[in-house]
Amino acid sequence: MTHTPKPLSRTSIARLGHGLLVGATLFAGLGLGASAQAFDLRFGHGGTEDTAYHLGATRFKELLEQADTDLGVQIMGNSVLGHETEMFEQQMAGALDMSIINPGLITDFSDTANVFSIPFLYRDQEHWQTVLDGEVGREIADQITAETGVKVLAFFGGGKRQIVSSRALDSLEDLEGMKLRTNPTKPLITAWSALGTEPTVMAWKEIYTGLQLGAIDGLLNEAEWIHRMRFHEVAPHIGLSEHDITVRLLTMSEMTWDRLDEAQQEAVMDAAYQAASYARGVQLDQDSEALDLLVEEGATLHELDREKMQEIVSEPLAEVIEEMGLTELHQMIVNAE
Image (cartoon, rainbow, N blue to C red; front, side, top):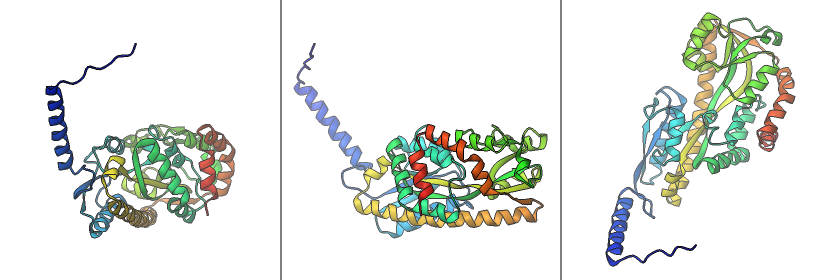
């Protein structure tokens, strides 16, 4: 049965008109009107002041404020606004303007973000840069944006992931039976199981003690964080697998993006691209310096047959990638030149 709404009374119309007028006034006062106004972008991240996160955010702020767009940037680092997943959810709701996000933490919101959890994705550092700065990177960014309502502006990252072990890694056979702490993503578990390890879930804060007590034999991490967390004190062997180069998403709430006029959007994208390139350079330098420090402090580096590792994991990984619907995207990355 069709329901015909009753016509509004004059009193109701007057109240509605007053409410719309108040709402429109508040809307404009918040800088949310049709024409963009001057305001500060709130930029949250999880890094301390000496990390590529903060240095990259600072570079973004400097570049944007030089662009004469009436946009400022308020940086709030060191996780003062919560964990990265929480900050991402704040951006989805329009409560936070910008952040730097580990894509592995937002796979509940974006299937596409899973692509960055595939090990041995890049041939080398140059290939990684080509993917992030080229058409493939923009395709990935656009897909994540469409799935989440959070715009991926550019890519930070640059830590090369290695194997940290309490026992020597003179050959790939030494991986057999290793209790390896890893993130519980299907591509990682599949790959490291194929290489003979026993993937193990353990909370980040428990890793050092876990290594001490033998609950785990090793983990996967970048040199910077191996050094920061002092893991090499209890696991002094580092297998140079370079099975991943980290990627972090520089993001903006689409609600914020839609507030900007065309000139502001252009300035934001330009600043984001330059800041991301700078931050990746910082991260790569810090990664190299940290590896040198680890050796100075007693860690032993072990060269591993990376090509052989890729050969071993190729077939089981292909099955998982297909199951996750990422085959086409994976091939785009592999073939990027």
